[in-house]
Length: 347
Image (cartoon, rainbow, N blue to C red):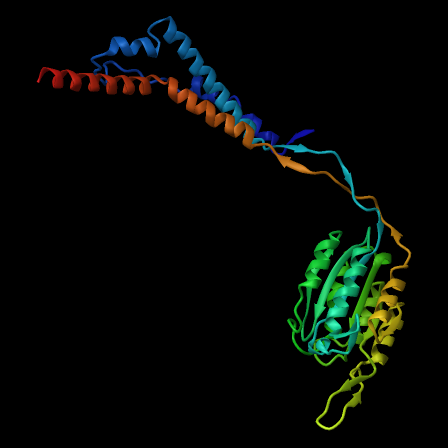
């Protein structure tokens, strides 16, 4: 259907008539311009039956022009059929650690060593693609935490922005507490029973303004469940000058704090030592029961003001073409050309 955003603009429709009857007309006692071919011009300006019809046509055009401008001023818009948005699901924020340690090559995909971040992009990207009906948001954190994608149904955008994230763009350290605090701030506007944060990290909180447990207590007060994932292999072979050494690349992983964060908020802590284990964890998180939400309806809106505005422009051009001053000017030009032609012929 068609609606008018500013219907009060229609009050200006009778304005020309008010001006016509209230403003006194100016009277001329003598001609302001002497036209040698006045008789010919009068034919086009209303001196004959043809001129009378042309005069009424101009008045009709003026009425149509003003009416079209007023209609355009009311800002008409077409409202389409309602489109139902997904009615069930959760508000899921994904907090992903992109600090320098996520560049450690201790993961194996297709028998090739690769970095932790590449595995996370692949696994979390598949998780995002499966979340039909959920609002998803993405928080990236390192030395600082920032919201990469607000809560949205657009899973493709979340997946694409995660895939394009470079290593260490947020700094080389790990601010787990700031990431949780940012998630709490973004989830406060959503239903209390429907707030979930999935936090993945491979290190320990070593920077930031908020302590992780303090942020977790605040999240618990607001009814936000936090599922924590500790990611990284327990063993890695490092080549030396004389022989290879086996080290633990996840020695700094703060399992105790991540476990306490999950306990305080009613979530679960899980340890992922490989790409397969990480996939299994996200598959388990994928089985969470959706919570019904209020039905949301979206109605597409398309502005229509440019149609009457375009009509007014075309009608204005037509009015200008029928105006006696314009016709007189054209006749004067023709007469001038004829006079110059006669002079050239005589010479």
